[in-house]
Length: 139
Image (cartoon, rainbow, N blue to C red; front, side, top):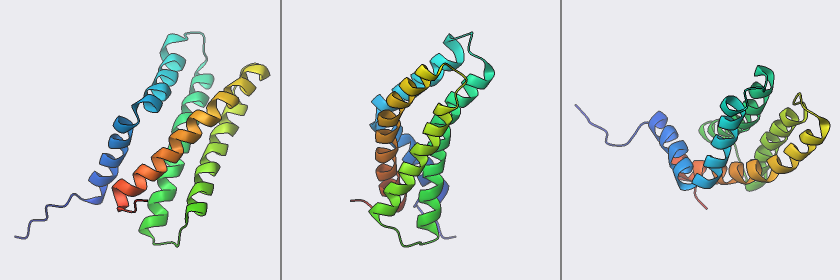
């Protein structure tokens, strides 16, 4: 039988995500700490608040991953501008979730101000790394 030593697409996909998290550990740790504080340390936080905060972390990453996989596997013609607009769209999606948090409006604005640069830089780095690691489309 023919034995292929190359990893399959699912394995490359998982490896890319894990390698990015390990390579960019400061952003990863910040997001994990935020989620942990929200879910476990703040006992007064409602389930709805925890769900919105975790969604604002998970959904933009999932959206970016889905866009990159679909655009590369279906061979759409992509450019840096289209990729960056998808990352901005994912960031806006996360900001919408932050803006509807069931908390005082001052803290929503403060959360959005802190969220935008942290998640934006994370998604930008994640997009570059993911595209390079999974599809060998490096800069």
